Structure formats: structure tokens, C-alpha cells
Image (cartoon, rainbow, N blue to C red; front, side, top):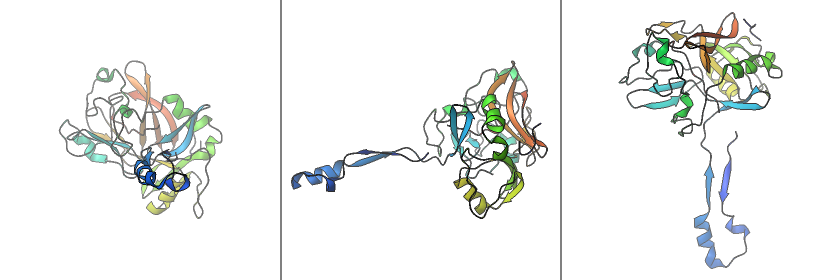
Amino acid sequence: MLPHNATSLTEEQKGMNPDRLAYPKSMKAKIEEEVSFECEPETGDLGPFSVSPTTKVMFSPGNLQYQASTKTWRFAEHQWDIIGEDNQNISDSYSGWIDMFGWGTGNNPTLISTKNGDFSSFTDWGVNAISNGGNEVNMWRTLTKDEWWYLLVERPNAEALNGFGNANERYGFILLPDEWKLPAGLSFTGENDTYTSDEWSVMEAAGAVFLPASGYRYCDGSLYNVGSYGYFWSSTPDGSEDAWYLYFDSGGVNMNNNNRCLGRSVRLVR
């Protein structure tokens, strides 16, 4: 167990500014009509974070959520948002939202089973179009075990760039981007720092990530440790029945492995 303290929008211009070109007046109206701009979708992603010596990623702005009745994927509105007890209502027709998933269920998010063999292959949740995350397929992905570990332990200055705290009265684990600059008027110690919703909005604007202690869903559908423990899947299997995940509680943070049928949180990157 480790100790507690263990992008930008771009535009492609199709055309030139008519006021800066020399041309006959008769052409001006036509040129102005054809001036247009094409932008990448605004996803609100956070970072950047190094997950290997050569790879940096941006985190999604909230945990992944799914609504079976409309087959809709989205990111939570706030980083601290969790569904909690309603994850027990998981079914193909449920009209509410869930945010706990068996391992690799990007193609079958409502799969619930006590048999680990029913989760034999991994389909990344990021293959789906996420409505408020660019709404395009294959934009996002799940970190591997090694990438989570590098982020927590091996990236430069890793020990100073993570810790525990509360955002809008929700307990969780905080990750700070590589080039972290603490916003004026706020502090970060990594030892149960507390932020109001407005204060966390400032931290988030500086690139900080908050992973809420959302608990987990057992293979039979019952929920445990909601609000006190955090469990986030990696894409890495362990043998034929288990998989690796990020785990944290008040005692620390680490990578662990357990049954694939367990329902855990998903935080995607790109």
C-alpha cells in the first residue's frame, strides 16, 4: 500500500479574412460567404498527465455513466458525482443511469453475472460515442495497469502530485497534472484537503482530477463501501478470471486485482 502522498481548443480556418485581401469588390460577398471555421469538440478534459515516459493523456471530466433505455453514454456532470445505490437497478430496460460496470463491458454495459467467465474478453468503453465527450466513437480509452502505476508512482514528482481530499463534501483521490500550478487562494497538501464546489471548480480549471469514492457492486448486484472506498478499472487482465484496478481508501492507494464480474467505476482518457 502506498502512502497518501505516494487541449486546448483548435480551429482550422477555411478561407482568408476578406478585409485583408486585394480583390475586386464584386468578389467580396462571395468570399465572405465561404469563410468558415471547423473546431474540435469541446470535451472539458483535464490534464495533461504522463502515463509513461513517452505518453501524456487528458482525463475525462467525470465518471462514465450509461442509460440502458436510450443506450446513451455520458460523463458525469461533476467530478464528484456518483450514482450510488441506484446501480442495483441495472437492467437492459432501466431508464435511470448507472456508473458501475463489469470489466470490459463497453459492448454490454448492463451485463451482471456471478461467473467471471462471462467477462472473458475486454471491450473498451471508449469505443462508444459519449454524448458530452465529443460524441464520436473511439475518442476515449481506459488506462492500463502499468499506466495507472506510472501516473501514481513513476512520473516525475509523482509523490507531490496526488493525495486525498473532499470535493463538495465527497471523499476521493486527487490527481494533479504534470505542470501543476496551484491556483491563488487555495492549498493542496494531499492530506484530506477540503474544497467547496466553487473551490473545486477553480482546481478543475487548472487541470486537477478528482476520483470519487464510489464503492463497488458485487457480482450479485449488492453494493459496498459507497462513499469511503474507490475502485477504478484498468484495461489489463490478470489470468483468465481477474483484472487489475486502482483502489484507494483512507489508508492509501494501490493497484489490486480481483473478479471481473465486480462492478467498478470507469474514468476514461484520451
